[in-house]
Length: 147
Length: 147
DNA sequence: TATCAATAGATACTGGGTCTCATTAAGCCC
DNA sequence: GGGCTTAATGAGACCCAGTATCTATTGATA
Image (tube, rainbow over all chains, first blue to last red; front, side, top):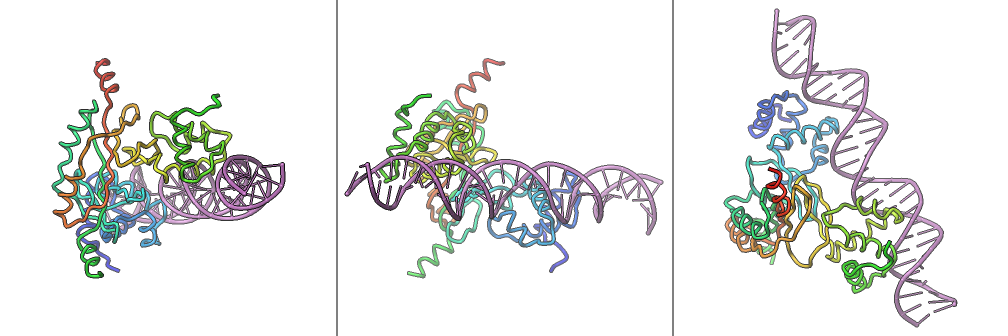
């Protein structure tokens, strides 16, 4: 059990402090746990990893982190809405349906395309939500190896 | 209270019958109620409109209709997942953040763009989920008139 | 129209999330 | 460092959407 939180977790806490929220030990624990996730997670996942914390505390911290934008929500293919560390700003996710991992989709410019198509429907675009499902590189490789 | 269900509702029922499901009076009621919706709705909305039906029955019918593809799920901007009449096949929605109405986004070919971008991430695309938010024509017009 | 599986309805239950309220502990000022 | 103020915590009640179970009903078919 490390006492010191890692760099990523520290960033989360700093963001909260910048907004005037106190840095408390439950929040450090939640930040650390989130920083350790390598795929989308649920509040229950965190609860399992932090049995000493109160239920409400976990939900509250999570909500706070989503509001401040350091954690974002991800829509899984089955409609389940989970959480994930967010790299600031607008981005999309590539979700592997095999191993559940998630990577950020960079350099995807659908904005222009959407703008154009929605305009043709008389629709004034203000935002969008996109999730992409498929198989990540390492799962594709495994598949090939198994055959 | 119309006895006869309208054409749209009849389509829903026919789809169920095609799949071997019985045409029962609760299902007729649900189909009719869904056909009357003009924006995404929740199970609770239906329940409010069909107080005579059992809770479970409404959920079951809804689930059935989603499985057969005549009703689809829509993700609202706040993360709320609701239901909506579905036009067959893959499509996206233009959701008006003002009046809550929804129209289908036709002629949007993001598939090719996504295919290309995900490939560059070593990702084998299998599906995607896209919702578009903004203001529909009539809400834009109202806005202009109000100024 | 009798039969029988599919369906319905009542209701208990589940799981994720929120609310309340008394207690604790950060952060700040001296 | 010690006390003060207020935000944050934790326990637990509560809420709400959705599911499971079980008995009664009903639609389709013979």
